[in-house]
Image (cartoon, rainbow, N blue to C red; front, side):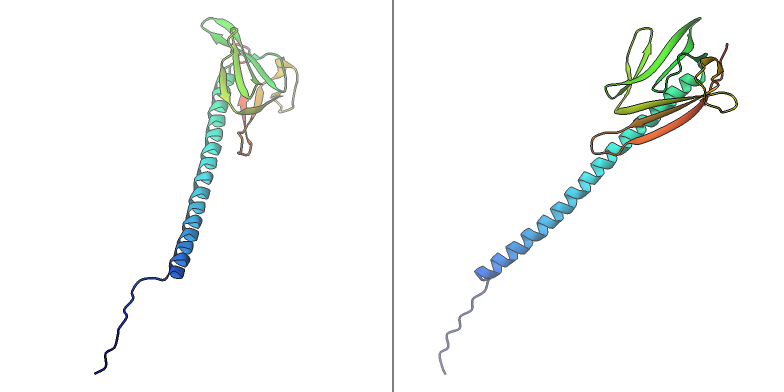
Length: 168
């Protein structure tokens, strides 16, 4: 019988290890990029929803207060001014945008109602749906709010409010 030297070498060569490590690194990089893209998209959507919710709630608040107002004051396209009852006296309420916030002014106080507000537009209508600039003829008011944040497209919502208590 012949003596044969059997050389059993098991394992990987250096080249196989380098190629395997490179492929694993490439695969992990792709997975990480996909996860990062998903997280960024989720954060952007969350911010967009926050802006929309803030805008919707603010518009409802303004509309509810305007609906029960006694009538509008000065007719301006970028400011809402009306009177309402507070106890047994009339007070003037004013809404306007300053420094990216919707401000509600009543009795000298100026608390911000909402942030990230870009514009406030007001349109005033007569009972026959013709636009008017005469406060005595106003029966319906259209409020248009636009809001936005960095990295999020602007959102515009509008509502039309019929004045219920005008002239009381």
